Image 1 (spheres, rainbow, N blue to C red):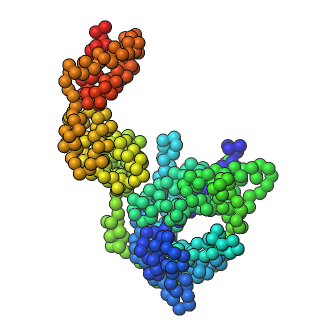
Image 2 (cartoon, rainbow, N blue to C red):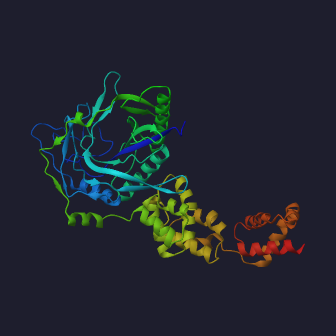
Image 3 (cartoon, one colour):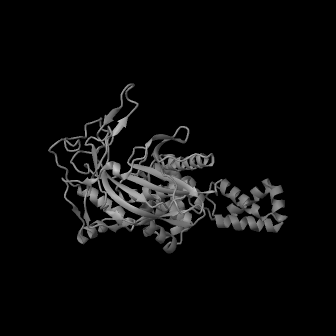
Length: 482
C-alpha cells in the first residue's frame, strides 16, 4: 500500500520575530502579559491610523534569507490580505503577496540513512500575526486576546520536495536551530513563536499530476508535525483505496488521539482579494544595507559542522551534538582555543558536562564552570596527574560544587593525584586475580576481552587513582606469568 502512492508535502513555517515592538506599530510584544494590554489604535486598525516599518523585523528577515542563500528582493511592497475572522482586528492582514523579501534558497536536511537532501524554498515573506482565540476561558463564548495581533512574522514556504513525516521533522528541526543561532526567534512551538502548517497530497506513483491538497494546522511540537503528516498520509490513502475523493480543506491536529479533523474548506487566493497596502511605502534593500546585516550574523551551524569535522577531525555524531546549540558550540570553541585537544574536549562536553546540565535542567549558559576550568581538567588528565575515572567521577562533581577553586588546587585538596607507585598497583592486581580465579582462567583460555574487567576492578579499588597504563601493564604481566 505504501508503494502505490507518492506523497507530496510542502511546509509553511511561521516564525515570530524577536523584536521589541510589533511589525507596524510601537506596541510591545511581551509574552504572557495580561490579555489586551499590548494593543493600540494602530494595531487594532482604527480609522485614521497609519502603520510604520519596523527595521529590526526587516533585519531579522534578511538574516534568515542570507543564511538560506535566498535571492533578496531590492524593492519590497506590502499588500492587504482580506478575510474576516474574529482574531483579525483590522479585517485584513498586512503581508507580502507578489513581492516577497526572499525568493528561492534551500535547506539541507539529514536523512535517516546518513545522506543529506536539499529542500528548495519558494519564498520567505514578511507579514503580521493575528490575535488569539481562547475557547477554554468561558463556557459560552470564545474570548479574543489581541496582544499578539500585529507581531512581526516571516513565513517560510517550501517547494513540494518533502515526501514523508520524517523529512518534515528534519526540516522543522533545522529551521528551529537556525532561527535560534541567528537569535531572531526562540523557536518555541509550544508558545506559538514557531508554527508549522503542512500541505499534504498523495498521487499514484509515477503520476505527473498532484493530488488534492489538504492543509493541516495546530501542530505545537516538531514531533506532532511528523505524527500529523503520518496520520494524514494513512487517512488519504484509505479514502482513495475505498473509492472516495479527497476534499480540499483545512484540518486541525488532535494531539490527544494523534489524528486530524476537518475545520473548513480550503480558501483560494482569490478569496483573499489581495491589493497593495496604500499606507506603507516600499522597503528598499540597498547593497550597503544588506552588507551591514550580513556583517552582524554569527557563524552558522553548517560552517561550524564543516570546521569541526574537517579541521578538528570530529565524528559526525560529536559535531552534530556540539552544533545543535549555539552556546554549546561556542563553549567548545573556547575550550579548544585554550587547549587544542579536540576529541577530548568534545568527549567532556557531550559526556560529563551534558549529563550535569540535563540533571540540573539548565543550559550551558548557566553552567558554573568556565572553558578555562574544563581545559585545565583535560590537561590534568592528559599529563597523567589524575586518571580519567577520578576526573569524571570525583574532581568534576567536586568542582561544580566549588567553582571558585581551581582544578589544580582541588586535585591536591582531595588527594586525587594519580598513583604511579608500581608495587602498590601490583598488590591490587594480585588481590583482584585472587578474587576472580575463574575469570583469570578464562582469560588464559583465550577470552582476552576480560582484560578490561580486571583493570576496571583495580581502578575501582584504587578509587580511580591508579595510573590506568600501569594498571593495564601489571594485569597483563601477572596473567601471563601463570
